[in-house]
Length: 125
Figure 1 (tube, one colour):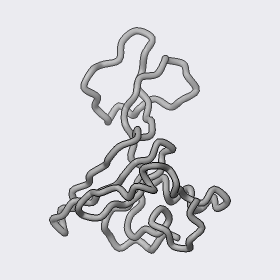
Figure 2 (figure 1 turned 60 degrees about the horizontal axis):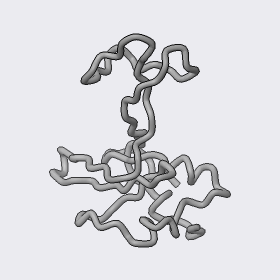
Figure 3 (figure 1 turned 180 degrees about the vertical axis):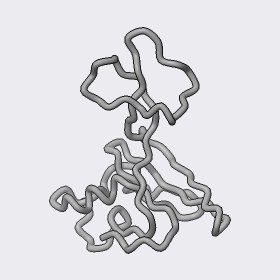
Figure 4 (figure 1 turned 135 degrees about the vertical axis):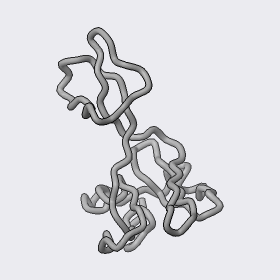
C-alpha cells in the first residue's frame, strides 16, 4: 500500500465527481432507482429497474473542453481511480494492485473513489 503523503490516488485538484454506470436491478431492491432524467438505451421491463453502479476495472477518458485535452484515469478492480499521464500508460505496480490507497485513511479512500474535473475547486488531500 502507498503510505506516501500526496500519492496520486489522494492528491487531486478540481471538482470531485463520482462516475457511475447504469445497471439492472430487481424492482424492490434496497438500491435507489435511477432518476427519470437519466436516459438508458433499453427500457427496463417486468420486475427490473435501473440503478447506478461503480465503473468496472478499466479506463475512463474525460474530454476537458476548456484546456482541449484528455484527462485519463485507470479504474481499479476495487473502485479507485488513478490519474494517468497523457500517454495513458498505467504504471505496472498500479495495474498489479501493488500500489493502492492507504486503507487506514478514510479520507484518502474517499478521494481515490472520485475523479476530478478541471476547475477552481480547492485541493483535495
